[in-house]
Length: 508
Image (cartoon, rainbow, N blue to C red; front, side, top):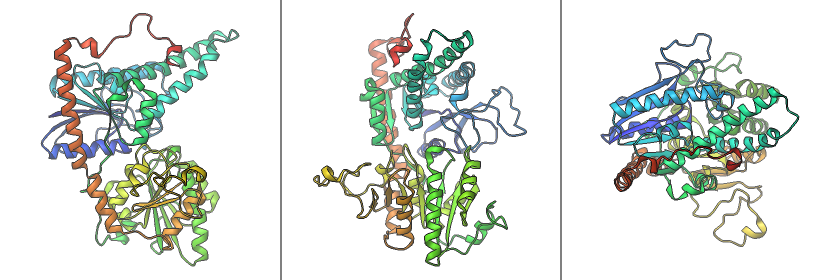
């Protein structure tokens, strides 16, 4: 099968990029042809052998950005930020958005003619997938969560702008600016709706996402299928005899006198992710203050390693200084080889996200054989809950205690749960996060690390996930071909907006 992956972001530096790279590796191993259209601001980006890459080129924000023929004169945008871009969809003007769409339109057309895909796998229900919908090729879209956040943000912004547009006391410039803003957000809404309507299947990666998508796009609810994310067990796995001295000597920290990580510690916690608000790193720093104080009283030393970068880095480093954290170290963006070794040394991975669509870093941590302490939100409980019972985000003891299918929180907590893979804690609660981490460090709660690694490999290995995806692709192709044969009319699948089509109020 010829599979064309279309993503608006790089294939590295963010969860969706890691995911499509892992999928591509698996598809190639299974004998399929893969072409990936992606956003980039450099020519030396990571490549999977056997995959054809078609980058849509942007301009990096560093002091001496690489000059590449045909690149757009701004950086690639994200829903939040990226480790290599502070640009977001929300700070672009409509001309820039249209310029991105034209680049993607040209790239997809070229690959439709040359690569001849059997199916297009769009990443995110957003403008890039909407452009892919314009071609006579079966389209499957994977929801990653930030696209749903972006769609809701667009709707909410339009609702806020609408009353202002109707005010009679606006200057000409104020009215022009408000109309320009409205056009951008209205365009995002229209493109997301266009993509969802055109897709043969909509893949969600958690039950939470299924619920959100169906609420936002009720007319497309019958297209939704759940396929959890997978990981590459060749990359993330249990290692024997990690050379801690060599690894730590290769890392630098601006929070130690010698610029190195200390090697004399009793327990190690690890965070891996981009520095965006929804990742909840600020909550981890608050919890780490409590942990360091608790460990100091016990005569123990805790090491907390934070891997990643992003727009919030100065703010988070300032918070660490203000808290007086003694042994938390930021080590910057790292490759999978370094992350895997750190995960094998760590006692726990911490995922304090406020809203994590899936949480790929959860299974990457458990694949390396240790428990994860994560928030009970978004798609994370789908991974972590191995209890056979329902774990509610907000437990009501008066009603929920009467239902034997609902799991009660751990005694003495405000909403912390223990499963075979780790512990779930409430969002934005540094006390509960600290308590769960210290329970593991002090041995009050123990886990079978070998069983954690085995369960992860058996359940989330990308080879098994790819088999599900290929089945969905094949069904979509058959369904699309049958539909095309019955109607013989492209416009049935890709209807154009009629003249004088939907107004701003129609989408609100």
